[in-house]
Image (cartoon, rainbow, N blue to C red; front, side):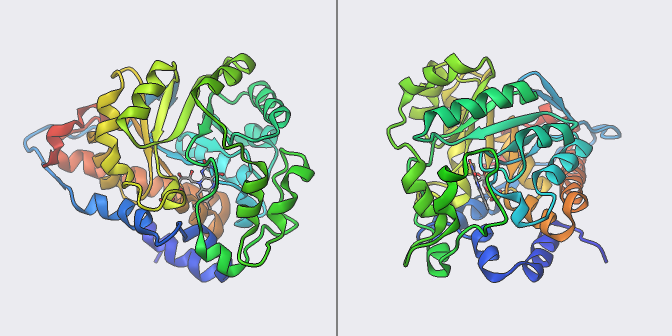
Length: 358
Ligand code: FNR
């Protein structure tokens, strides 16, 4: 029987991937408390269904930063999709387009920004890390704008990389044939070797990530691009307010899938305070642990305009490339559709706090 839920893809991907790659995908930082909390948070909530509502037509469509989307479920930025399928991000972009879903490509993509844009039939955003090598960053931003990317997503929860012990124990390094092709190979060299007790990613981040990033640096990005700016990795009302004051166009409530600060709150738990701290016109997205349509509905009810999924995309890619990612997105869309109908809230915009118990 084919996969009936995302967990089926997880099992299938586990059976296909080498152990150290599996650890790289699934792992979090430290004791992996935040990783576990991301999932546990959904299980603590219950939904309040209303009855006797005409749910013959459901609608999960929305408009996000000016782009129409068929679903609030989008693809979170993740490095190196070619680790999971030879077509890499090109396969992912095709699948996102088929589903009418947003894709956020990563600055460490293993296919060129231009080839991803060519394959995409839906909206594309580009994620950035604040690299010490500011010229390389400027060049990527310029190319993204020229290729038709519609927003820049600056990841702000990674001034340095979290202590990912699975990768350090495995001495995990990115294999030589998979490269972050949008950046100069010299900038990426450290990712391809691992020192004793470390991983290639940790060594690379230490070398290349600029930990001096502060709010005033947003001006640098704004000077170089007219694209909307989204901050990814906001977990507090304080930072949400600052983001709004600095004129960012959206925020993503995220703890990087439990891969950065271990002990950070589950993203679903941080969502209400972030949503309450920004003007209603500022879209709040969420990622971390979204695995079912019910999870999506909960996040939207608690203040998210849309959600992003990370690991399930890589499971789909590992299992069946473009088709696998498309199936992952279709499953979530179908589950969300069922949830809207059974909740008696046929439209995405019907989801509010009254849907959530407690
Ligand atoms: C990530 N994530 C990530 N985030 C980012 O801003 N830039 C990146 O390059 C990556 N790379 C990356 C690789 C892998 C293998 C994973 C699992 C995650 C984090 C990602 O965008 C997202 O925040 C989480 O994955 C969301 O949580 P779930 O859905 O994986 O639980």
